[in-house]
Structures are given as C-alpha cells and as structure tokens.
Length: 132
Image (tube, rainbow, N blue to C red; front, top):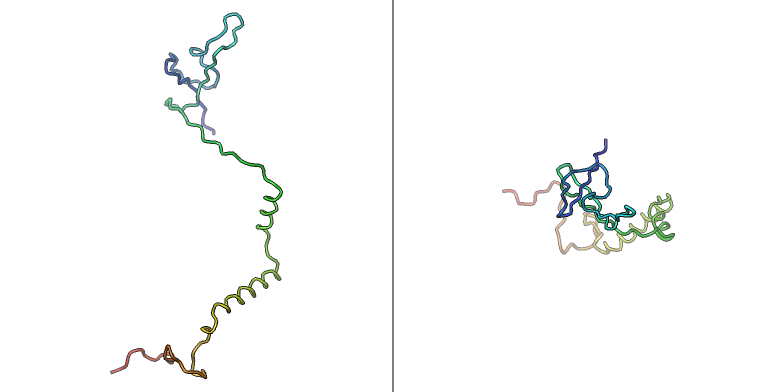
C-alpha cells in the first residue's frame, strides 16, 4: 500500500502546527479578501514526513523529444547480425589480426628452415635447468 502523503505549513510565523492529509492552503497564513472571500496572498502547505520534516522535491531533468534520427540509431544498434554479416566480421577480424602478427606469427619447431636467433627450440618435457 502507498504511504500516506502529509502536508504542513512551514512558514516561520505560522501558529498552526497540525499535519494535514490534504494539500490546500494554510488557513492561518493565507490572507483573504473580506468582501469576496478570495485569497489575496495564498500560502500553500508543503509535503512532509510523519514527524513533520519537509520532503525535498527531486530535481526534474529537462528531457528532449526523441527525433527520427535518434529512433533510427537506436534501432540500428539493436539489430542482430545475419550469418553472412557475422562471417564477414570474423574474416575481417582474422585479417587484421594476421596483419598485426606479421613475421612474428611463425612458430619455431624442428621443421624450421632458418636459424633461431632469439630463443632455443626445446622439446616438450625437456627440462629448463641442466640435470646434475
């Protein structure tokens, strides 16, 4: 169930300390015209908690209308790729990945035709340190 909204006049010189269940105008602080009974200076009550503390209203952010370009951009970003598009993306990624590897993509093994300058080729299971 929703909490009950409570209202109270918070003007400094107000004699009314009562917390009301309806917004309305403060009867003590509002000045009325004697002939017509219409309020001359209305003083509204503010939203408060059950203990009488004022509840601050959250700041409202200005929102702008959604344009057609915004809608199209959102729709394009939410679309799923087709299988052909996925395949093209994977191939493009592999192509750029292979370019970055360059000549260092070669794995040295016992079938190499060139000399190894930077590292020795070790067989699997061979110890790094010499045995005593």
